[in-house]
Length: 327
Ligand code: MEV
Image (tube, rainbow, N blue to C red):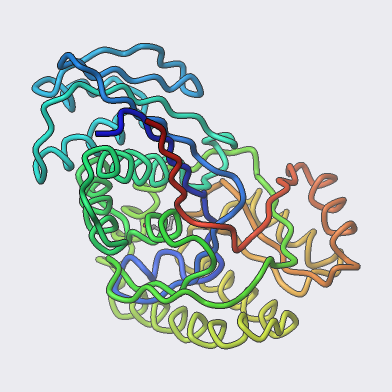
């Protein structure tokens, strides 16, 4: 058996369809060139050792029979532990392991470090144990892991971490269709506020239980926007796509998931000449995206900075899961 593997998986940004995708609708997500690195070593003893310096965890020690029981661990580490549990529920693992994770980006941005580290851990373990797994099998194990840890989620971030590129995705991986797109002229602005995805998903669930018909109608309208943008994004028809971003944002506002900071950055981008802008992800904070012509990008970046946001430099449509193994 190989004893060491390094897996890298990309973070992601949602382009269209957040929240509705939790309820059996499609979304479009693009992988970004900010990656999570997960290195796994097989150990001869039975220890599980986790290093995640980005979240202040060094040489955290446990054993297979004990992992998953410490709820005080930082989020990233809980995903690593649960990923190991999901893997060992399915396949036999007698060795100890050491896992080390490192992010290219701050976990604050909402680029999806939890999903990328989950993918890194399970893909790495299967490589070390010489278990052949299709992308879809890997997706299923990772999705199970995410649901165990946070209870909610469509799995779109897992798909982005595995397949990379830009994908059309339906809840739980019912459809995972890579789109042929290329990098996109999108400016990303961070609000400075970290959003908590599960609580925003629960907030929408709560609104939906009170106003079922109208929220379902909003989800249907979002699904229509996603389907239109699926055609337009491949043709790179950015002006039309920008309009759809604005429409998507209006519907997200109706779901009460935007915030003042997001709205300010979105308005500023539009005023600076963006074709369109919207929040990206769960809302409440994290990032917004603004689609613009190449010659407007600098103006839009300046507008975001002046309005109190932080421009995050990323490339879209980036490569999916990559494996580097050593003997
Ligand atoms: C969060 O980034 C996107 C949501 O649609 C949740 C999910 O799809 O898992 C709000």
